[in-house]
Image 1 (cartoon, rainbow, N blue to C red):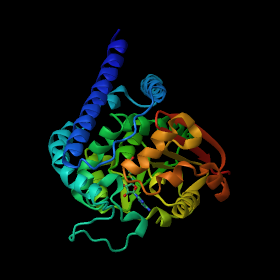
Image 2: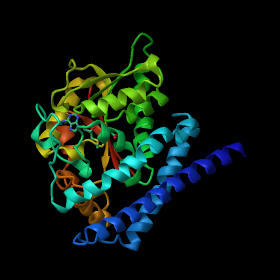
Image 3: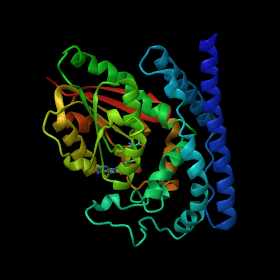
Length: 351
Ligand SMILES: C[S@@+](CC[C@H](N)C(=O)[O-])C[C@H]1O[C@@H](n2cnc3c(N)ncnc32)[C@H](O)[C@@H]1O
């Protein structure tokens, strides 16, 4: 009875996030069209694709719930909402929209304020990804990011991130049987730290590490993760193409929503680096967008996404052979999963 009530609360909570996001998108698109009527109307998604998406969404939420029942992570994780951030930053997100629309209309995709230090970053990174003001390089961007992603995915960003937890926990079991071993997990492109926080909820005793190129996003991650100061992950500013760690150091490496934001050559280098720092017998888990080969019926939507949200490397990503890239560097026994709009690759480094 209590179990059913908790499940119902979770479904209701997710549904309200979905409706809120939809409402926000409808209103903001109407306002944008009013202010900038020259904008091309976005293509409508077919009823078949919508039905397919709804079905996948239901499956995602069911799997999320089932994983709590299997003890992969506690039920309480399903209800962790950053309400403080929502009330603090939703008004700022709305206030930021007019300048975002102006940039879109002027086709300005690499616009940074003069106070933003652009030195030392790879050129592919200096973009207004998702039309974000100052790309990944400001505290405002870091503060708004999670909310923007929640709205984009209708509240399913964390349920999608959580799909790495079951394979991760399963793969690490073999190491946990060795009592003296301290398990180390690295999250590559950890952003605002949400994946690290979720890993902590499933694996409270492991040592966590995170790297990202953005100092502002790392500050935000530090803020989120220091809610539990005894278990603070070690966060470093670094390019994932040059991971500052010893060879064979981590029992597991994860990366969530990074690869679609890298040009092909950088994608390969990052995979090489992840292979280098993973221990033999360890695992590398990627979570990223679905690709065209995974969902032919969603091709139009996938192609529209790159244009609508300024994702300059996304189109190439959607046709990339990630398994081939992983095998090229030495990963083997690669398992693929699809959950809602995300794809998961679970790659093993041979002993
Ligand atoms: C779409 S966000 C994903 C963030 C986070 N993993 C999540 O789940 O929300 C992409 C992240 O990748 C980081 N990033 C992009 N290129 C990078 C690189 N070459 N090295 C390290 N981080 C990078 C960005 O700073 C940003 O935080």
